[in-house]
Length: 286
Image 1: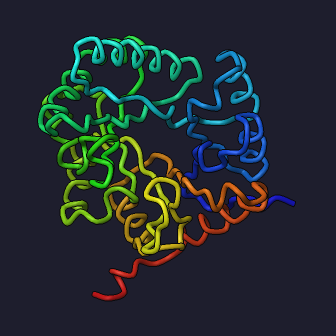
Image 2 (image 1 turned 60 degrees about the vertical axis):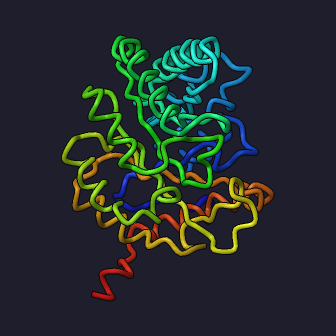
């Protein structure tokens, strides 16, 4: 029998966490374990009608915190930036079609372009697509990525940089998706999470773990408990901030993708239960 998730902490799983599965396989397996939050990666929508995807989600009472992902705005050419805007407006349409609350953005970067210019282009891009997001009532969540991705995946590497864009645009549909994998190292992370809560820009919260012996900087993330992040501290902080969104499991792992995915999902449920009940190491040391 599948292991059912029993804790009151709202849990969602990203389809990329179970990359070998189709959208239907993810939905059916999550629902069978009492997980009714699913953040949908766009690759699992390929080859199926969006209306069919929405029907499958609705039939299983699934809530979609996010469609993942949009972004990759910076470019050294005007045509490249325009192409990104056009694509991201279409992504917003996809999110609306499957009743996703938000689109999560990996904003992009260009190796031979200064980061400050890429950040400016990113802010300009969000300003350009916000009217379309407003028309579809879709939130836009900027996900800061760890600095190891600054060269070519994201010019937004700290929550402070995401906050700057939110403050400049000052729109209720622009906010931040905070992923512990990317932000746990930042000395200002607690302050920034608190600011995001006050400013009502804390749209998403992703959990996994950081393995000190990581073999690949993209596809060797840890499941909760595999690494060194004090996840209970962040869970308790989210409670203190009265964050009412989903705690979203997002793990890229060649190791875990090779496992039997049903058994792996049972492991995810078990670790999520441990995460939900655990006490912070920081609290015990003070």
